[in-house]
Image (cartoon, rainbow, N blue to C red; front, side):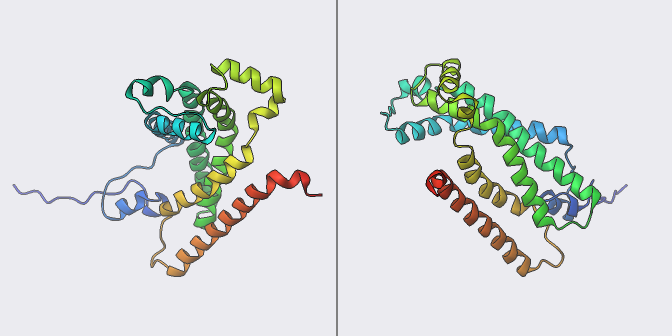
Length: 233
């Protein structure tokens, strides 16, 4: 007996799945993740990224502070992984907070208003998630960089030195610069996830790019001017 292949039914409407909606529109079976799954996925993705690229980050930090850099194979495991545990402790929760906040806020907004404008919601929720994550990430980044550059031997010594020199505020030195760097990136990252209207409007695409461009310019200007505001009187 011949069986007729049945089309796969998407588990969620394409308009609610972001990038996954493209697959649903083509008859590919997809499933929307819950907030717990987003937390886990964000943490795992961040951990994998940091684990593979940490030596590159270490070399960058040493070059920035003028420290000699060794590219010998025998030195990679020792020299280029200083501060790795501090980085993992900061980056995995950071990924969980960023993507967990983004997906949770976005879901709550669209649950209350299905017709909410997608571009502001996606971009705004992504930026909010990054700010929340940066509150956790900044202290670990400062400790990590001190270990990478050889200023301190271990994370405990670094934390004590930071607190002794600048108090709790020392753990958030450079917070504005970190946020100014990451917010434009986060906004650009989520744009491809925004479901396109049917028919897709080229004017909407231009408007989205223009909005992100304005945000980038404003954030960069603030990041440049803010450090000098102490003398702007």
